[in-house]
Every structure is written in C-alpha cells, then in structure tokens.
Image (cartoon, rainbow, N blue to C red; front, side, top):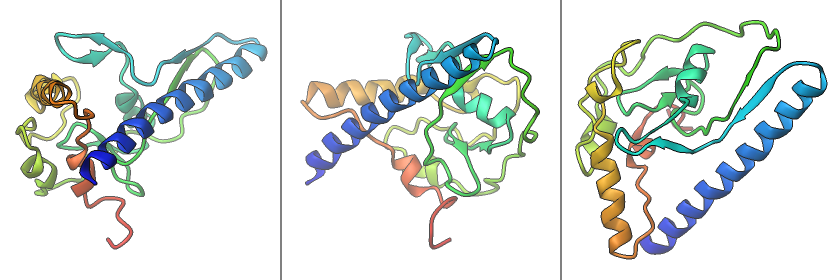
Length: 172
C-alpha cells in the first residue's frame, strides 16, 4: 500500500504542476489580450541545482500578497488550508490593487514539521525577510533523500511536514 500511495502522490504532484502551468498560461494570455505584458512562471522548474531552488519563489510571492506566512518547514502556511496549497504565478505590468499585506509567522512554539522530518532538514528557525533560506532549511538533505528513494526504485515523495502541520486541518 505504501508504494501505491507514493506513486499516486508523485503522479498527483505532476498533474497539479501541469494544471498550474496551463492555468497561469491562460491567465497570462488574457492579460496580454488586454494590452499588458504577462509571463507565466512554471510551477516547478529547478533553476539552481546547487542551491536546489527555482528562479522565482511562488511561496514568497504568495506571502507578499498576504495569503499566508512562511512556516518552519519553509512552506507557505495559509490560515484555512495550512501548507496544503500549490501556487502558480504570473508576472505582469497590469495594474492590480494590493489584496493584503504579508502575514506574520504564526507557528509559535510548534515544531511538528521540524520533529517529523526524516532527514532533519529544518532548523526550527522562524522566517525572517531577507535572510537566506539555508538558515532554516537544508534543501540538499531532502534532495539526497529523494535521490536515495529513486535508487531504490521508489517514487520520490515525502510530505510529512505537510501532513503534520495543524493549520488547515478540519478538526482544528
């Protein structure tokens, strides 16, 4: 059963990425047809293999737009859904009004994501704007964990930090 769950989770991740890419392309097209520049940013496109990051952070953009805060897992945490949200972005010069302002971190003393991580990738440090991600998260540890899974013919899926976050749970 565990292998089936991993395969399904990996497949769902890929399907959602494809749908996000289609949706952001569609939105960018509408914006362009209205006379503005627009660029859909791919959902998951690794740009820097050494730092294991993308050229653009959808999570930081969502934080700046006021959708949530960056948690100790370096995921964007929304009050309603916790970290269980996928993000897409469209860069544009169209004049959109600000929706909200960035939220302050609300994890407090919770360490659930830090404690459950099988490779101890999180330091437990709270997000501070302008500070390097590496202060809070060792992405290379997760990347190596996924590489080991692939070497053992497993789908590279974890998500335990998403699973344990109390924000967004129905019974909360």
